[in-house]
Image (cartoon, rainbow, N blue to C red; front, side):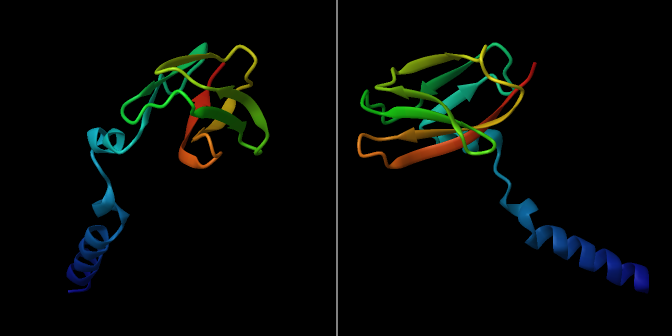
Length: 112
């Protein structure tokens, strides 16, 4: 009897937990303005606009400690960033508009 109760609690927990909020990979990209690849990256990373492109946007990259390590203003529709000067680790990107408002952010990993 106890086993049945534990199984019911376990199944109910999975149905109401964060697992039910997982989205298919295609849905994760559908809401994003930028698509970035490859991730993890080693030599370079590409940022391509999926929608709402404006050449007055800026792209900023921060290391995991919060220090700005890269900034590009007036980015193009397809942007390639050389990672030669980046150390191994996790980086945060921010896409900002002309008023410095963050439109989107995400993270990527650099491997060496």
